[in-house]
Amino acid sequence: MTTMTETSARFREFKMPDVGEGLTEAEILKWFVQPGDTVTDGQVVCEVETAKAAVELPIPFDGVVHELRFPEGTTVDVGQVIIAIDVAPGSGDAPAPAAAPAQEPVEEPEAEAEPKGRTPVLVGYGVAESSTKRRPRKGVSAAPEAAAVAAAVQAELNGHAAPVAGPVVPAPVADAPAGGRPLAKPPVRKLAKDLGIDLATVVPTGKDGVITREDVHAAAAPAATAPVAAPAPSQAVPEAPAPAVASDSARETRIPVKGVRKAIAQAMVGSAFTAPHVTEFVTVDVTRTMKLVAELKEDKDMAGVRVNPLLIIAKALLVAIKRNPEVNAAWDEANQEIVQKHYVNLGIAAATPRGLIVPNIKDAHDKTLPQLAAALGELVTTARDGKTSPAAMAGGTVTITNVGVFGVDTGTPILNPGESAILAVGAIKLQPWVHKGKVKPRQVTTLALSFDHRLVDGELGSKVLADVAAILEQPKRLITWA
Image (cartoon, rainbow, N blue to C red; front, top):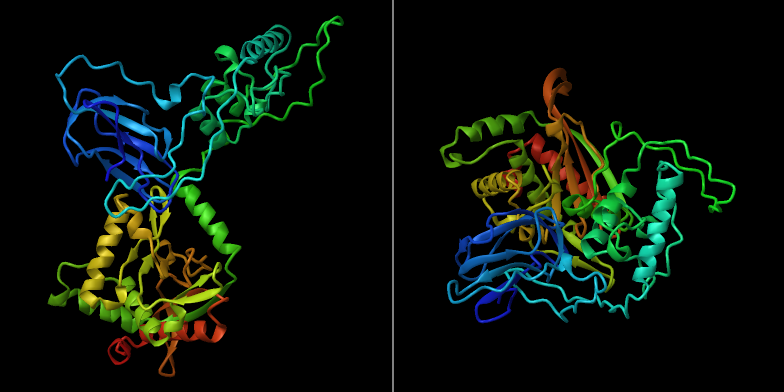
């Protein structure tokens, strides 16, 4: 099924789908079509960014683009119509484009009905039931009065005082509409939320006392401090609190937290303060591993795939998990159970322009070394291109983060939510090392293993880390232990 509605036999509407696991919104990054363009079933019409990844959306029918409901850069709730398609062009005069949800009459900014459930739209993507219920406003009889009072307050500011730096002092505007919320359209509310602006503190300049985008931006970037003229003795002006010190925009940049960065922040906070982390370290001589990497690069069976130390480290971790399967588990808080996983979906932390993501190699435990190398190469390339799908990041069991590529010795990694362990790999450096009773220059690195102490005891975590280190020191153990 597809997320679309039929407005007539001629026009169909395509809604923002839930392209992940219960996502509620997505930002339109780029439109690939414009009104008047011909589209075919399966053609990608736009790219959106969810809290997990950038995703391309295909249209599920043929026709001509009648209307784009939202511009690029807009965050749209799942279920809202984003594009209308004329599926029978030339059959008659087309009706005027419908007003976008952002342009609905201000007296009903949030009164549109919500569907009881969402419809699956893309093969393989599940959707979440919506529990949001919006209460329609009873009316906006106070709007003209609010507009009058707002105009009076604005005139007071314009006539007797220069703008004051810092947040705008809440004006004694008329009674708010039913529900006690300032009048603003949904996109304006979203903008205010992203910028951390309380709408109750914003002076509206729009028609009928409606807060506009410009009002929100003005509140977010107050004017430079200016002296406030004293009112005439006959004028009674409420005493305002001392203005906040203005920030220098040339010295600061404020970036709204959204998309992948917002998801990362929420996940890391949730993981750090839910799972009791323990991190252990080991420094190991990996000279033989580096020699093996050089030999594999010349092996004809590895032709066409990327061979690097991360490949051997990944294989070493998989062998260590096979020898200590209890580490590959998850904590089920709701049922108070430890869930043992009999498969390994190996996550690889990847830094991308949109932030840190952790796609995983499905059933990595079953892959041969060449297969694992090919999967690693594909994962890294897809992540760098920003094309990692939400499905590729779901279901991970353990993760590797290679901080060594930045020249860092090691770190204390935070668990990917729902996983039991994460291995950090430090930089491999030539260091003095005691080898066969003599100090020699050897390739050395430091490994750090963080694990969830609710389900992984110190002994188990230590065994896993020791096994990884032993394999990297003596790679032939990949044969004897596998």
